[in-house]
Image (tube, rainbow, N blue to C red; front, top):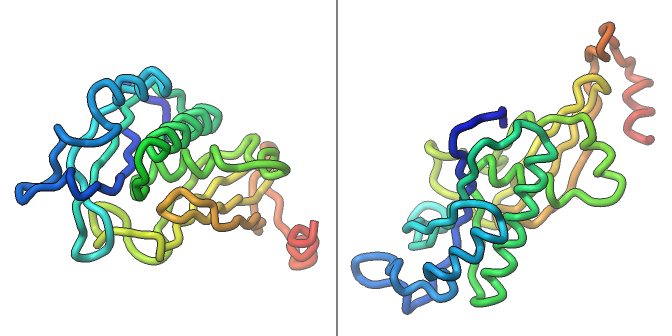
Length: 210
């Protein structure tokens, strides 16, 4: 995610309650815990412009959902900013689910990356220092717009690269926002800031056991 003065939207799809759906679709005027006052409170807590719109959940023949949108302006294009936004997204989800039990689905790449980065703990935090976001992929399907949806049967990979130390930290995520695992993978050839370095099979074997 590069630095931008434009508005960047982070999106989370929430499950609907029976009383929130009519034959015409999701009733945005009847959302429990997501009314105008609730959204204003979430906006104050997260520093975002928070809105909702109809969405969809599931794979294939998708069901109705609620798309929660947190919009930020002038986001710094660094990992620390992404982590802070991820923490705010996680806090908003926790507050919403404390009011009413709702399913959560993340299928937006920026949102998945933010939540993944904010979920890193312990020694892994050091591995993120100096790294940058490289890619976000649904390993079990596509990503919007060329896809059929996602749910907790899928695994997403969020890839952070440390260019000058020559490794990638890959965090495996469920679309629910749950961290499923992680792996640190060495790059065979990389630029350390002054020269190219190449790892031998022995170097890679040692890296894997460090």
